[in-house]
Amino acid sequence: MKYSQKVMEHFANPHNVGKLDDANGIGEIGNAKCGDIMKMYLKIENDIIVDVKFNTYGCASAIATSSIATDMIKGQPLSEALKLTNKAVVEALDGLPAVKIHCSVLAEQAIKAAIADYYKRQGIDPEPIVGKIEDNDHE
Ligand code: FES
Image 1 (tube, protein in one colour):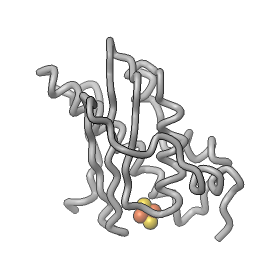
Image 2 (cartoon, helix red, strand yellow):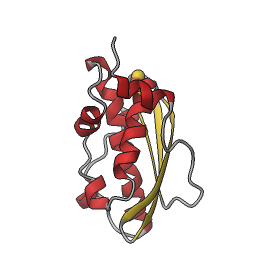
Image 3 (cartoon, rainbow, N blue to C red):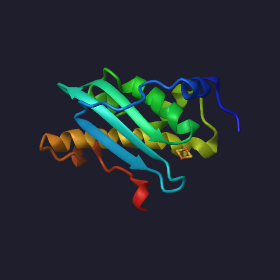
Image 4 (spheres, rainbow, N blue to C red):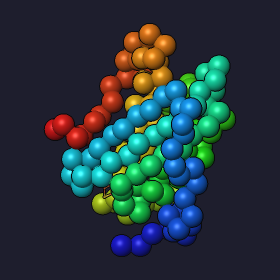
């Protein structure tokens, strides 16, 4: 299996790792196949993601995709963050081995779950905005 230089860089030195104590949107997603878990913390002000951090018990690809995905949504409005696809994340990393594509879905879904949590806390039903979240954990 061959990883791109970008994957190696983000794995060796991941950005935005940790926990946000003042997060107002938190999402957790698991993958049933590998058992890995991703937790995403968002701090949202006026519909803008002002800060983001993640924690994962995941593989190198999960760490690299979360690192770059969190870079991509930081400072963005929620509407833009919701458009982030795992495909865009994989492209930004110059590709992932085919058997590792599912790892990039973890980051995308955890971001969506955190945004859904934010809307729920505002008393807004997130499903029409965020859509269904695939939590493979309960398959
Ligand atoms: Fe589980 Fe990559 S193998 S997230």
